[in-house]
Each structure stands twice: as C-alpha cells, then as structure tokens.
Length: 121
Image (cartoon, rainbow, N blue to C red; front, side):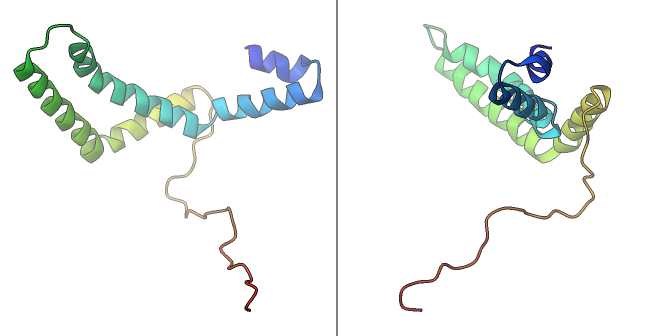
C-alpha cells in the first residue's frame, strides 16, 4: 500500500507523520462504519438520482420514487442498524481492524466545560 510505503520511507518527518495519521484513520472502525453507511444510503438513493437526471420526467414516477426512497431510508434508520453493525464488524474482523466494545461505557473526552472568568467576577 502506498501509505505504508510513505510511513516507512517518506523523505521527511512531516511526510511520514501525515502518512501515519492518514493510515490510522483509514484502518479505523469509524471510517469503515461511515463507508458502509454511505454505501447503503447511496444504494438506496441511486434509482431516484438516476431518474431525476433524465431529460424527460414522468412526475408521477418521480413522486413514487421519492416516497419509496423515503420509506427505504426510514426502514434503514428503524431496522437496519443491527444488520449494518454486524456487516461492519465482520468486515473489520476480516481486515484486522480493531472493533470497539459496544457494551462499554462511553466517556466523552474533549473540551473543558468550565466557565471562563469574566471581568466582573
């Protein structure tokens, strides 16, 4: 893989660092999850997109396609998460990508929520 080669043989420290960062993102569960989600959503919307690009439009057919697309996306939202998660988990295991423990407690790490001192305090 090109990024792995740059990580090992990049001409500058900055180039190797950028390649390392990018490579770690590409082999993350988050990235795999987003790609699989986008594949599913784009698969659902493809027929509608193709129909909307036609020069002559059958408005009744387009209305039907919009309703069908909306229904399929809602079905993915309501019933598709378990299947999607299983698909992504299987993919990650096959690719040796670390899968997070979905039953673990979530801890948000980020900005401090302290109030800034104002001039009146």
